[in-house]
Image (cartoon, rainbow, N blue to C red; front, side, top):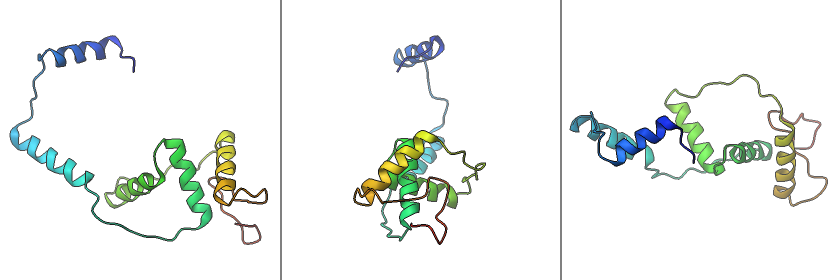
Amino acid sequence: MKLDAYESEILKAFESGQMRSVATRAELAKYREAARATAIKDRRVNIRLSSGDLVDIQVRALEEGMPYQTLIASVLHKFVTGRLVEPSPMTPNPSLKRSHDSLARRLAGGGPSAHFPPPGRRAKPSEPA
């Protein structure tokens, strides 16, 4: 990763010991506990999803560069902490649709007739799902 001049200056100061934390021991303990509580995943949950939703989640996870289970956990965490923000309507991305279609075929067993709606669109009752 390439650092700009300012970032390099900060890194050099940190590595040479010129920078000191201004946090108190109590603040550090509070932040350490919060980080520990956030990172601990001690429960397992099984849910049922439609095939189309799962494919959409897997495609979005690929786009974000993370495993789809991590994406699901992140979305749920943001929801329960009130930090989930509803975005404006998704604009279809042609390259994402190709990835979506390719993943959908793989998940459906590779058959050429496998069809899932593109991301952001749900199948109508008359469409195959």
